[in-house]
Amino acid sequence: MKHFIIIIICLITSTCFAQKTTLYTIGDSTMANKKDSDRNPEHGWAQVLQSFFKDNIVVENKALNGRSTKSFINEKRWDSIYKKLKKGDYVFIEFGHNDEKIEDSTRYTNPHTAYRHNLIRFVKETREKGATPILLTSIARRNFNEKGVLVPTHGDYPLETRLVAEEYKVSFIDLEYYTELLEQSYGPEKSKQLHLHFKAGENAYYEKDKADDTHLSLKGATAIAQIVVNQIKILEDSSLEKLKKGIK
Image (cartoon, rainbow, N blue to C red; front, side):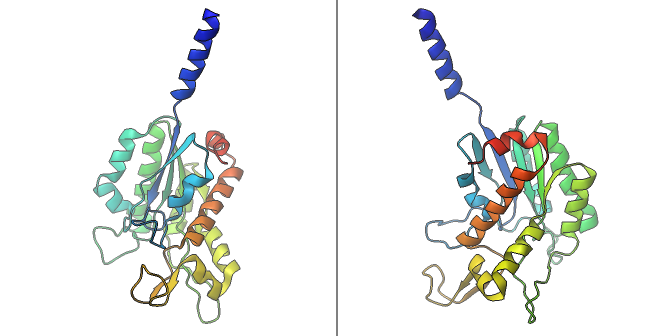
């Protein structure tokens, strides 16, 4: 009986103190948590990501509005994550929207030099800690021309993300491609539902007309989070096994 009680205590202790896996997400406003989330119609796709995982995967969404790879590093935000990273953790990396801002020296990066090297730094330092990086291209903007063609807006940033993923053998999700398909499936008019399109007075959060084709509604954020999870399921990388098992 005594031995049985000891075994039960050990099982309870190991269950209670089992180390959870942290999934860090780093990037910009298309991923970030939003203030007043109960009222604010804007959502980042990583804001809703936890609902796709069981309790053993803890999503730490560290993405922030307005950040590029450069400002995220210079503000020591990456350092704060690097210090906490542990073996078996994961890091989703999706930048580009603000690296493009050529008139802002605090954020702009040349896609072929600084942007590329910043991505490489994230990858190498994640691996130094025994964690697994996953690179993602930027989500597409809702940018249809008068002919109904979805026109890309990210220049060479997605290309460099693809090249870094290939060169450094990093798990990769071509989110630009899959969100292009998402936008196109809705079409020029209905795709407004994925973003923030409101007439004045239509939504209590906005006093004036709102027409934002970059940021996401809850519908858009949820659809993109689902895309990311679906892609994780089919990626052929043994280091993602724990993450895959954590999907609901």
